[in-house]
Length: 363
Ligand code: G6P
Image 1 (cartoon, protein in one colour):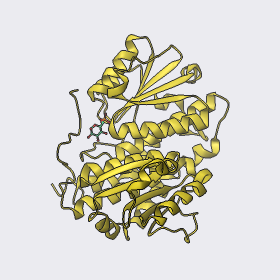
Image 2: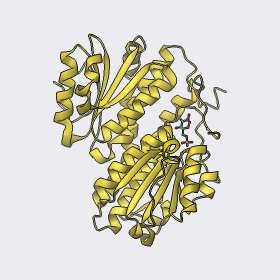
Image 3: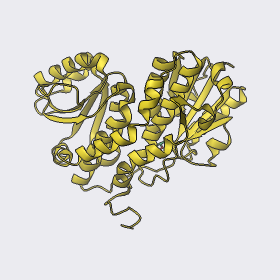
Image 4: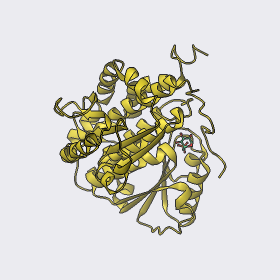
């Protein structure tokens, strides 16, 4: 068993550590001469041109990847995107039309609710596209087009490498859409190829400190995650990770929304994880950090290297973010490790958390 885990204590840790190499596998052949190659993500320029709107459906971690995808597609390609939790979407009497592409994101490719949404879209004659890790899965077989995340088997129930590769495929899709919609970003496409290297850099840095920070977190009861834009979507995944395996109560909030209620819960010593990689709104998030600090919060900051070290955070976890639009996969690593080490410190079965299943094939 230890051998299967490549010498790591848990599959989850192995899968976290594998990420930079897995990203390389996911990107391989999909970029050529600073352009995304549409057919390598299962699409054609003609299909991409026809897409006027996108509806993403997914569950759990895949839903959180979808939120990142929405932000990237809207910002890079100016194509409007909705993202819904599959179990809601299927009963919401959704409005779909022929110019819409429905994207199902699913690690397993077998999640019952996600599959139901896909089938509903197909029945209405809408083009369906799936992003999955599982070759030959039902979601893959029943979609009009498919892109594989190529993360390799993910054993731990809490998703890590499947999540970051879903984000990479969505980034490729956003850039491919941007190409056909007249806003090509060769600079970003080129930078994507640096991600495996940067990922290794993040991992090398993380092993110092994050374990002891997690030991502190392990002794608390409630944790708040805040961020804006992509960082808010990341905050949602960060809080899910820690809930899933450490059983701490955690909530994610859009940093600017905190003062509309939740700030009342912040008291002396309340842990707040603040994510700051979005440079455009960094000063806004910093002012929200000051608000929670003023109420006594203990702040874990997952921040861009570029932010001054004088920031009022108690535990600084700096990540080398060279391009904010490509930050999510890099900033995901400390969030995953923080959840992992917190669960270990609390003595939980990290790979098999209570009440949860890797693949939910029943409604
Ligand atoms: C389960 C897993 C989650 C996962 C979700 C969606 O609840 O425990 O980790 O995010 O299903 O799974 P999928 O295979 O569709 O991505």
